[in-house]
Length: 241
Image 1 (cartoon, rainbow, N blue to C red):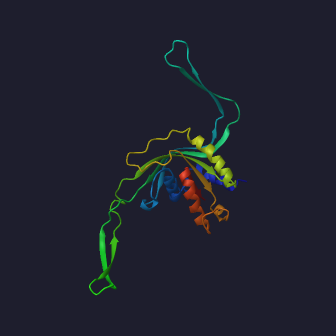
Image 2: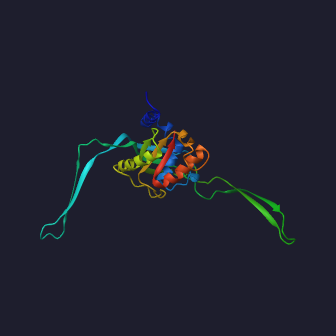
Image 3: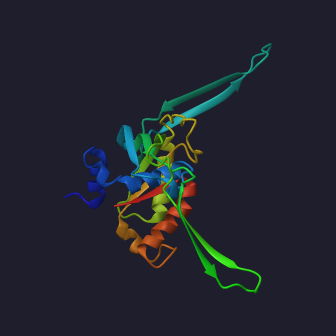
């Protein structure tokens, strides 16, 4: 009998079922973790291009040696580096690693003023008048017509199987090392500033934030928002299922 974590991992593995885990909101969380994207400016649904998604990616156990040698008469030393597999079992690294791109559209500034409403407010003196002015702006003109931003990402996923947050944080360090074994393409010139080139994503049950041990509020949504606020700057996205 599969547990909940196994089911989530299999849904990640199946391209047809993957959107049930990585929906538009989840993909937006990855985008704002990896890039300086203001979610308030994002129009439409965030989508993804999966170049590859590897499952159960382990961290090879290797030993390395670095030496600097110099012979008499040599002008420069010789740097020698060697690495070899120790033959020991690999260390569990990440439940999955995604290499691909996130596709978002952002609204620009400068909507059109469609209406102006002016009402008279009480004046403080006989010779002055006070007015309340309310402006109604249309949606930004480039929301639908602007070309989408295609942002390359490398994300290592950890599917929560009921472990403690401390264990997830410890596993994050290893998952990040696994992500570093994948090449990270450069973002396009028009991309927002890149915050991290390789991120880690926790996939946790939404019910986890019903635990009052999570700080940040009295509801699960408030605790989730608070967790994202302090985990995001560490390159960790949080997706709930």
